[in-house]
Image 1 (cartoon, one colour):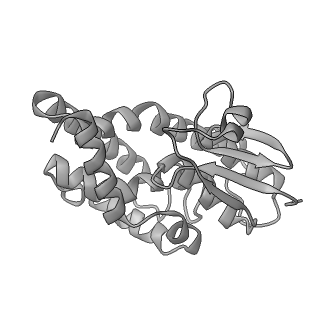
Image 2 (cartoon, helix red, strand yellow):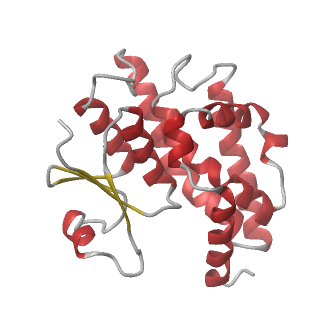
Image 3 (tube, rainbow, N blue to C red):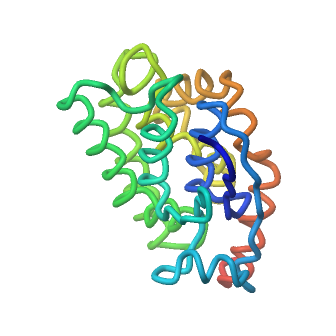
Length: 219
């Protein structure tokens, strides 16, 4: 079924990381193409003409856009190993709810932590910690969000973990002090080869964030 799988991505994208992890969980060979988002490739514009954004999963010449949708697609096309979504319809709906929560809440709040200053940054930090605490409550004492097995919500959230050192540095706070169980969960996820291979070095991400801060004029 693999035939040709190409991923148009950008290395620090926490959304692209989802798709990388899902493909590796399934053992699917894929060609990774890192995009220059300031000069998008003709292939990216052709394959995602609506949003013109990464990641784009191209399977046999056909594009699948939006990371959460890509992860579901990968689970359906390659069902032979490591199921990502639960088989129970209610549990599946709950997993989709939490990834939707992450998609609606996390990006804007985390951006305020490192890309703003003063009162806006303080508000962003409070929002961000509140979101993490909500997720930590949902995790509870389970090893993973879905229970004993690594799955859809874990994949949906873990890409942000490689940005945590940058949030802490530029926001001047400790995520582990606020959400110890969430950090323990992230370290557990990092023991999986699919995750460790898909997340970039946090130090590189910190450098990237510092560059963004200069561009946004918050240095």
